[in-house]
Amino acid sequence: MAKPVKVQKLKKRWFAVIAPEIFKNREIGEVAAIEQNNLLGRTVEVSAAKLTDTPKDQHRKIVLQLSDLAGDKVNSIVKKSFFLDNYIQRTIRRYKERFILAENFKAKDDTIKLKVLVLAVKKLHQKVRASLIRYIRASLTEKLSTAKTDELFLPANLEKISGELRNEIKNIYPADKVIIWKTEVKKK
Image (cartoon, rainbow, N blue to C red; front, side, top):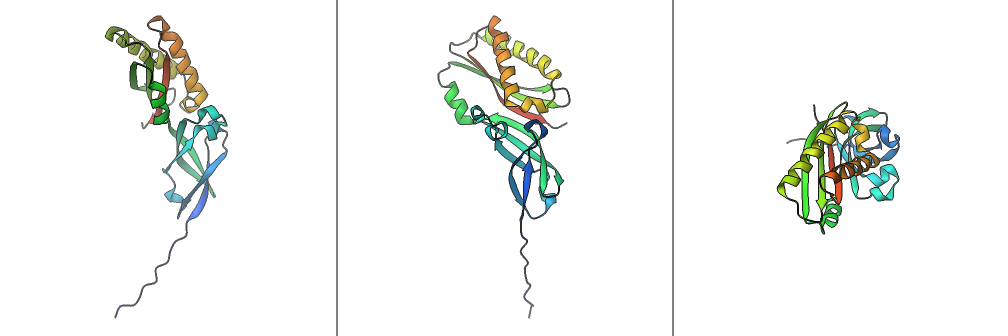
């Protein structure tokens, strides 16, 4: 007869997640794991409003990747940020012209993928749309080449770049809104 084997249940422990330096290294929550090593590489999705203490960022999410351990605390790095889909759907409802530019750009220290959403009330001619895309691509290449990757995830910086793009493309066509919809660090 076989002897009964006693199965020992492992107990999970809670580890505090620390935000990156651009968000002032504050504790943003806790994650559970059996071993500390299981945490490395795991991602955590956090509201930007919680990280920046600004209510207007409630429609933006930031995905943090757990990177290194320090006792019962886990440091994180920013992996991507995006607007919630329901916010984008409410925003684009009244615009007839919508197009997205999804492109990889070289930042000062890493490669970053941006999705830029351009909205206009009236339909655009194909040549106008093509010149807008060319201009936005060239402008973003220039702006992002001098920017550090971490700084690009701050909602205030993304809004500043969006506003500058909107003002710059007025010479070609006065688009109503330019939104940097998604931002993601690409692996090297």
